[in-house]
Image (cartoon, rainbow, N blue to C red; front, side):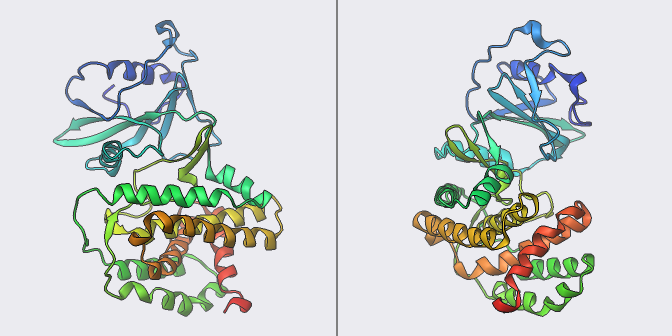
Length: 358
């Protein structure tokens, strides 16, 4: 087990994850350590099934885009192996512990975090959570909603985000972090321009820069512990409702401050709704006017529901500049990692800065 996480698990490793869960019931020997958040459910597999090819374990399938590698055990537990292991401190264990302490239940049940010490460094190896039956992420279910023109879900989405922020706002820590918010956004704009070869985009650079100006104004609203990567892909629709997952932080933004304005998460969530509209237009042949109207209505309904629960945490003046920064980051991500994704942020920007909207 010392090598776990150094390379992605494959079907050859079937049985290892179930064995780990069995080991979590007792003392874990050094250099490993386990932090337990909730009691693990009892698993009903037969130990004889732990041979290669047994059916006790399965992956999510190649169609699921994963930075790490997740294994479902007995249709009840998910073990996410960090590939490679991540140096501690890492945000997920702390947030999972806090959400359990405050009774926040709109997430996959957090069970445990597995770490090991290597050369005086503590590394996070795996996170263990509950499996949510019939779960689909927002890049599936939300695109369905857009295609059908339904916006009722946005009320649930806004309420979920508001409850999450209300829970996270009670986590003590370094308030008013010294992060240069305006400088970080300006750097994202510069990188997006450098990496995206598009004359139209260069033509709106001044407008984008002007949108970022509110970030330079001293803030009076509180900074809270945020999710850090809150988009519809992190919202599962499952048999019993909606759940927010993946508290690992944003993998594309290095050294982001854990305490930030709530508007940071809110803006990423609102822009992801607009990305859903672009996906529906491109992949589902949804008429553009219908998809864009859906995005506008969904955004307003989501924000209204959020305000009812956590409006006092939200500085509305920061939403737009954070939305602009997010689109810059989407362009950077597309240029560096996923060129075919460029259509989505470019489609959103063309919608915002079309002649009739300028």
